[in-house]
Figure 1: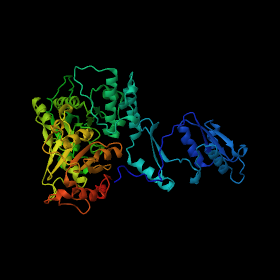
Figure 2: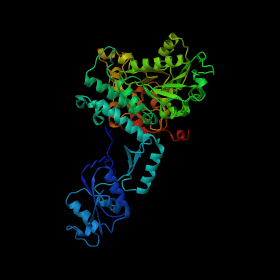
Figure 3: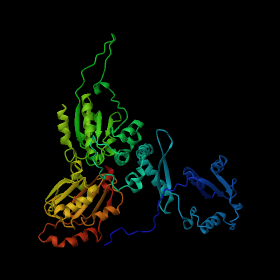
Figure 4: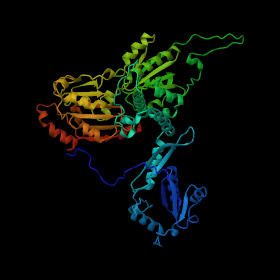
Length: 575
C-alpha cells in the first residue's frame, strides 16, 4: 500500500514569477513576442526585445512600445554571439541554454525551460484599474488553443466583481499585519498558515485586554475567514468603513444601502401636509424569520426559504457559510449582513446578530436570520428563539435540508442501510466556548456523523480510539477499531465538493496529503460508508463479518490507504 500519491510526470511547476526591475529578453518581433513583452512589462520587468532587423523587423506594437521607451529593441544580427545565419533566433536560444539562462522558444518545446500560461488579469469594475488577481491555464504543450478557451470559460464563470474583491481584501489584510512583531506570527502569513482557516482562536472576554500582537493576530484570523467564506460580490462592495468595521470587530459586512421601493413597506413613511405639521403613522410591527438555507446547493432550498428571501426579507442576517449562489437570489435592494464569526469569536458575533435582528424588527422590518442547513441542528436556533421572545418577538422557524443527511447522500453514503447501519447519531466535534465534548462509543450497526470536527480531527480520533483512561473519558462506550471506515466530506453539494474516504488509522495522512482544506467539512464514521460503493457491501452486520474487515477494507480502497473524489455527480450539473 502506497502511503502517499505516486508522482506522474508531464506536469509543470506553476510559479508566480515577479521579475521587478530585472531584465527579461524576448527573442522575436511578431505579435506573440509583443504579447509576452506586455506580460513582462506588467510584471515590472525591464524588457529587451531581440528581433531580426531590429526596429524595422518588429511588429507595430513593439515599434510603438519602443518609441514610448517602454522597452528596448535590438537587431539580432548585430549580436556578436550569433553564428547561425539560417535561424538567428534558434542560435540565440541555444546560446542562452549554453550560458544556463532560462529560455522559452515558441513552438519548440525541447528548447523551453519554461512556458507562458494562457492568462487573464482581472480589472476592478468600480475603477477600471487592473486588479492584483490573475489566473492562468497551461496544457503543458498539448493544446494552446484549448488552454485559451478554458481560460475564457473560467473567467466567464466568475463574477465580474472578483477583481475588486481581491483589491478590497488586500487592504484590510495589510492593515491587520501593520503592527509591531506581527511578522513573528506564522498564522499571519498565508504561505505558512495552517491548511484550515478554522483552527480555533482563544475566546476573548469582554473586559480582557489584548497585546498589539494578539490584536493583530485576531484581526488577521478574521481576514482569513472573510476570504474563505464571504461571497465575492459582497467583498467587492466593501467600503473603507466596512473594512474598519471588519478589523475592529464592530459588526459584520453590510451590503449597499437598501432600497425597498415603496417606502411604506419599511415602516418609516412620513407624510408632510401643507400646513407644516408632520404626521407619522405608528410603526409597523416587525417580524423575524429563522430560516434554513440547506447544505449549499441552491436547488435544495425549500419553497418557504425561497419565498422568505425573495418576497419577504427587508434585512438578511446571514451565517458566513451560506454560499454566494443562495445569497444571489436576494433582491438587490435588500440589505445583507454576513456574520463575522471565526473560531474563538462565535459567541460575540452571535450576540451582534441577535441584537441587530431585534433592532431592525423594532423599526418595523422583516428580518430573515439565514442559517446553513437546518436552524435547529447545531444552528443556535433555540438560543435565538428565546432571545427574540424575551425582547417581544416570536420568530417563525423555517426548516431547511440538513447537511447531516444531505452531505452523506451527496457523497454516496446512506446514514442507514439494511445490512450495514441500523441507526445513526449526530454530534458536534466542539462544545460551547471551544470545550471538548463526549463522543458516542463504537456500535458496528450505527453511523456516526460529526459536524464541526475537521479542525479538531486529532482530538476527535484520539477520543474515538483511545483506550487510555483519561482519553476514554471523552467517549461514552467502546473504542472504535482503527480499521473503521471514515469519510471527510467538504463543501457538500457544491461544485467543488471533495470526499476523502479512508480508515480511522490513515485519515490523518490522507488529509495531510490533499493539502489545503475546503470548509465547511463534516465527518462520517461507520460501515455504511462501504454499503453503496461499486457493487456494494451490505454484509457487515452478518454473523462473524468482523473477521473479514481487513479484506473488506482492502477491496473497498483497492489496496490503497485512501481515496479522494472531486466534484458532484454529473447529474447535478444541470440543476
